[in-house]
Amino acid sequence: MSPFVLAVALLLCFLYVVKNRRSRSKLPPSPAWCLPLLGHLHLIGRLPHRSLHELHLRYGGGGGLLLLQLGRRRTLVVSTAAAAADLFKNHDLAFSSRPHNAAAHKQTYGSRNVSFAPYGDHWRQAKRIVVVHLLSARRVEAFAPVRAAEAAALVSRARRAAEAREAVELKELVYGYTNAVVTRAAAGAAGATAGRLRQLLAHSTTLVDDLLPDAAARVLRRVTGLEKKIDDMNADWDRFLSEIVAENKHKASKPGQGGDIVDVLLQLREKEGAKGFELTDDGIKAITKDMIAAATETTAVTLEWAMVELARNPRVTAKLQDEIARVAGGSEQVAVMEAELNGMPYLRAVIKEVLRLHPPLPLLLPRESMAAAAVQGGRYEIPAQTALLVNAWAIGRDPAAWDAPEEFGPERFLGSDGPAAVDFWGTDYQLLPFGTGRCPIDFHLALTQWADPSTTRRSTAQKQPSP
Ligand code: HEM
Image (tube, rainbow, N blue to C red; front, side, top):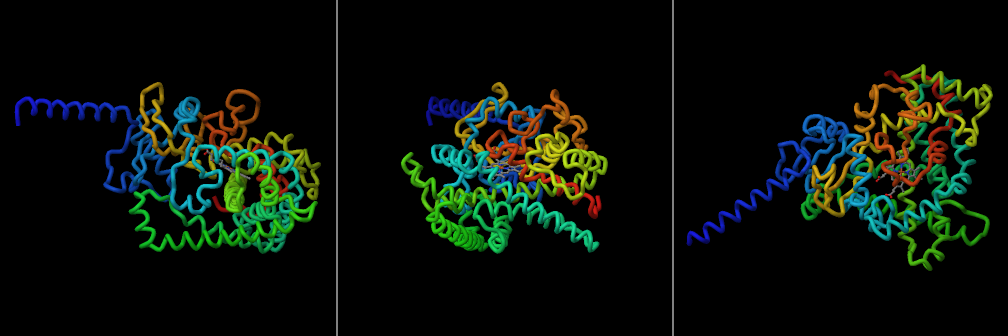
């Protein structure tokens, strides 16, 4: 090799190493031990939000960002309010898509739903349908009697158990409540339908995110039998949803009936077709399934944590009971009406505090960057197609954002300015249980779904779980 060629080769090698080191130096910090294929997956335990929080404390280096290799996915983890504020104020659009997940794609009729749809026209149109037609104030209001009836059923189940001196399984009670409300809102029926839905949802939780390269993931799913499990589960869901669609098609022919989610979607089909958005049967099933899945577990978990915190904090319970007595007139038999919920600041503060410490989706839903982004004023460069996990659980405990972050103190939200004014709709980055405004529910729906105060009053008087 001539000396000239050798010199050019050495120069190119040198430039490559310098460039690589420079671009690496612009990446957020990472833990050192990155294994082949697994990356940093071996560092993640059974409760990923806690593992990620520990990794942030150990390796994060103060900027609130950590870059991990989770199997095949390069993943940015956000763990502080300041880092979340920078990212969402300045780069929200860049991080607006969802990472592709083969199992989720299959489960959602080819990403025809809202939650897993990649950013783009389909997502915008489907989201509009959800916000404007399925969760409008009028529609939420229309289901008030359903919520009232199911809340009354919950209270009487708890009361019967207390009278018989039996322990109350809160998880069962609240899950039964949300399951029944959601089934009636989605399918117009409860009873056996709610039971079937409950089974379907229970099996859905066994699915894992596919973090291996596509081909390896496919082989692994086949070898472990997961592929068949996913296919069987999808077939069960499809049977369930197809039956509901068929029943509603029949109902829709009789004016004055219906009004549940499937019914509304069927009625929209023709109109939406004219606007260039085709609501096929699969599209209707995908959106309905999305609403069911998004509403059931989140609501039940929030209610359950609320009950746990009230049982652990008798002082808070007593204050809340006072507020309920003031609004309901103090009688044991009088229930608080939904219209009165807005006049209950302490209840609202309790719910915010529950969601600060126990966001039901502690890592929100994963997002993905659609373009490279220079974040924190250019300190870090995040390549395109990096998955994003926002650790809302860690952010709710960020000592730079909260006084006494581990304490359950709803009073921090009483008042109208300073920390008291912090709300959870996505523009106060220290409190992100719903992400940054992508979850389509509004406060009234949230309150009415979770907080039937008559439930709070009576159930907290029952046997308390051990701390
Ligand atoms: C305690 C209750 C709830 C919590 C904490 C919650 C939280 C969330 C979060 C964190 C996201 C992801 C946001 C993001 O990617 O930035 C989300 C998305 C979503 N939620 Fe909720 N949610 C709740 C209740 C509900 C209910 C009752 C419904 C429907 C009736 C619903 C429907 C949806 C839908 C359709 C999406 C997908 C939005 C999109 O990707 O554009 N959620 N929710």
